[in-house]
Length: 133
Image (cartoon, rainbow, N blue to C red; front, side):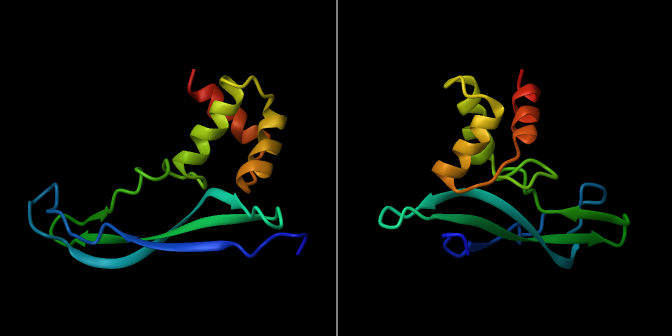
C-alpha cells in the first residue's frame, strides 16, 4: 500500500434540472446518467504523514430532444475544464507553484504530491502554464 491511505471518493450529483432545448424550446427527456471522475487536492494525515488522495465522481444528466435530435449534457465545466482529469483547484495550485514560487515543472509535480496528495505529470503542469500565457 506504500503508506497511502485509501482513496477518498466523493460522489456528487449535478445537473438534474432539465433546461429547455435550445432548438425548439421544449423540455428534453432524460437519456441517461453519465459519470465524470476528477482528481482533487488531497489531504495529508498530520499524525501518520500519509497522503490521502481525493477523487470526485460527478454523476450528471444527459438529455435528448427527439424533435430536434439533439443531445444536451449538464454543464460540468465549473469544476474542471472539458476533457481534463483534474479539478480547477489542482490546476490553479500547480500553476501558482510554477509562476509565483518559481518552482520547476518537475519540482511542482513533486510538491503537488507531497503537499496535496495528487499526482500530476510535470508535462501536464507545463501545458497548463503555457496555456495561461
